[in-house]
Amino acid sequence: MAKWRLCCVAATLIGLSGCVTRPSAPPPTVVAAPLPPRPMPSATLLDLLQAEKLIDAHQDADALPIYERQALQTHDPNILERATSLAIITHHDRRTQTLAQIWLQVRPTSLKAESALAGALWRQGHYETAGHDLLDILHRAPDTSFEDLVLSQQGRDDQERQRLLATLNQLIAALPGNAQALYARAFWYAHRGDLLRAQTDCERIMAEKPDFLAAYLLDARLLEMQGHLVAAVATLQRAVKEHPDAYIARQSIAALQLRLGRPLAAEEDYLQLAQDVPADGDFWLAHALLAFQNHHDARAHASLEHLLSLGEHLNDAHFYLGQLDIQSHRDAQALQHLDAVGIGPDYVAAQQSATDLRVKMGQSAQALQHLKDAAAAHPEFASDAAVMSSDILSTEGHYAEAAHLLDLRLRDDPKNPDLLYSRSMLAVELDDLPLFERDIRAVLAQNPDNPIALNALGYTLAEKTNRLDEARGYIEHALRLTPNDAAIIDSLGWVEFRQGHMQQAIAHIQKAWDMSHDDEIGAHLGELLWRQGHTTAARAIWQQSLRSAPGSRFVLDTEKRLGAT
Image 1 (tube, rainbow, N blue to C red):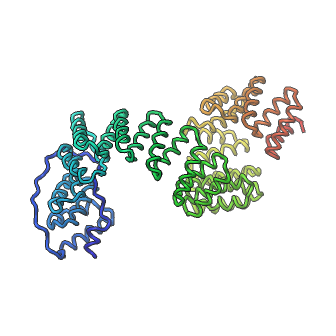
Image 2: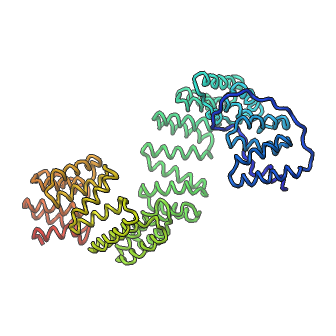
Image 3: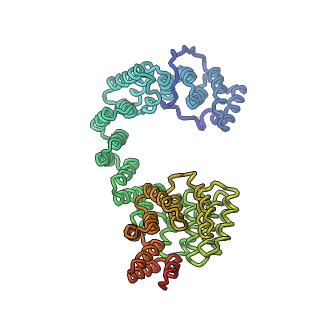
């Protein structure tokens, strides 16, 4: 049992693939040795035990010399197989060649040994010699694939590439009905950028051997690379007719439907895939996300619940179930799902959603404690937690406390742009313009094209200073980066107002209001209308803003300042 474990368990698959180019050298001559007697000598057993320990410790390169020595001494076929596999995975082509040749002498009919030898020869540039072995392999096992081997050695110069292609052509001529040889050439053409020749080979395979799935997949990829997405879908649909269970083809169709702007078709494709392979969580997640995007909430909910039952993609499932519950005003269920999201890509967004929900439910104290506990449990979340906590405190008017919280966190994370931006916004509330400028410019020093920071700097300068031309420059820079941002268009309108260009100001802010009924934009538009004497229209805008944002300080402060209350 020990010997079987040493020589057979976890043996690396020996095939034709490889990816390291080696200099050419003539094949060495190997002299055969007699097979060792049984049982295995104790010295051999101890050596192999040591080698296996090294393999378990991921030290394959150190295990290779030990296995190689025992393979050359014993000529045991199992040891030879294990030694050859180690030589392949550690990219020693000459040693692979030597070991595979001895292995073939011991087991002349071994396809694994012949494949290993062909691969080693090919990777060293002995295409013609390797081609003879490949021809024999394909005669004996016509379905053997070797396109990865072809790609491992694409030729270092034109002459070598011509030799490689000549070998492929000879194989195809010698085996006119062999799809694998033709496919290997198609694959080689594709990776050389000769897409039309690759397509020609794929079309020939599909005509001569319509059940050869790989040709359809490659042909579709070639069409996709040329921008022929509809034709690529048609090719994949032909593949599915031949192979109804070709899930990779069906998944590719769904992905192409998305690129073609057909999210509803993609949703249906992924639903069918999920139903056909109900244990595959990837299909259920893809369907759930598309259904969520397509506002098919019930279908998204069902697929996400199925993911929970499978125990797969749990963070994604809980996060999106939480979003669906928020949309349906199921606040308690939403919190349960959001709080179940663990560390991962959705963690910060889940914490933000849960925080907003708790504040909306009048649970600000609980939200602050939850964020504190989350930061203690996950130190990598501490800066995000500080930003969220400061937002809660500032919303309730506790500006100094919020700023102090950010000050403490910035001691440990002084360049964090989110912390700096949040403190800059608090500095505005505290009328500390020097601190505001210092922090917002520190954000821009890290990313000069940050449209949010540029807009904040421009708007604040327009609101708080007379540096209006400078303010306008920052806002226009931000608008060039994101030309359809309502907040930035509103800022441009506000600087126009501050510069005395009332008609331009109204035009910009009206445009911003049409894009987004944000309460701050509504406050601005109402003020401009009020100053123009359109008091009824101004009150209507303010009332509409208050309906969507009850208690908006922007609207209430504006009404009070203008005496409109």
